[in-house]
Amino acid sequence: MAIMQGDLGDYALPELLQFLLTVRKKGQLLIECQEPPRSASVYFAGGRVVHAYCPPDVGEQAIYRLLHWRQGRFMFLSGASPELETIHTDLRNLLLEGMRIADEQPDASDQLPHGNAILHAERDAQHISAIRITVFQWRLLSLIDGRRTIADIIALCGRDASDASVDLLQLLHVGLVSEHPDERYLSAIVAVAAVKDAPAAPSPQPLPILSSRILQLADGKRSILAIRDSLQCSDNDLIQEVRFLVGCGRLAIRSGQAEYDRYVR
Image 1 (cartoon, rainbow, N blue to C red):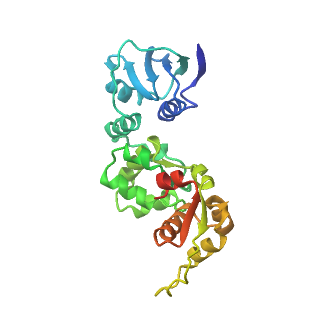
Image 2: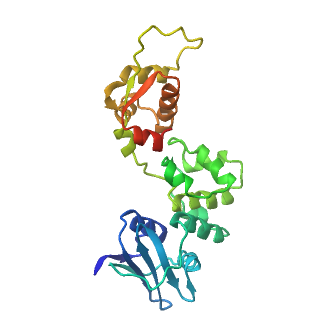
Image 3: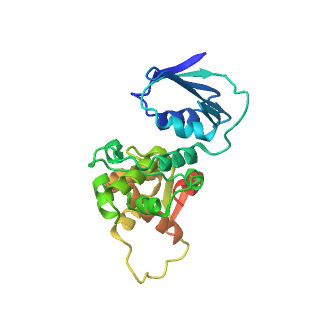
């Protein structure tokens, strides 16, 4: 039964594949193109991609070939099973490798969002650890703080703009970078300023202003999302200070410890 259909002109294939992976549906993504006539399929099961064919290729090479498709209709057939499994690699790594194979495209900068768009880095430690990226892509990630624009990041990275655009586009396609940050973990974490039985020894250095304000607002009821909104600071600045305060024992996590360990620690 078809439960989803659409046009590749409206849904970029990497984002479509990742969406289907996220909802953990078992089935077949059938893609058809009229000019020239051709068809391909990607099968999902157990929260991963298990098989693909894009004639004349099957398996991982079929995924790489599919990433070149820019037009066509797609349909997701729920419950369909492949006759064999040809893919055992994480989808994000497949997408990243596919982008690397195609990284000679001269128009990578045209595929990026507008240069004034602000980017946010993925903070899910489980997702990050499953993806292999280059040293330079780590450098790009270190520059993404929720305040810098694409133009700022490319200007600061110390590399040719066209090469940087290709690497940044790869990071966007595999979900390590986004224009729209997932803030759900911030709303799940509630912190409280630590109360000590005895007065603490004077600190040789005063706390930064942002750290002091976080401690004032951390009442064990507000989420760190609410604290961020009150202080009107960036996610990156907030997380750095919360991590520092927890590390030195000035702040305790009252609820959302799992989210703190996964996204902040």
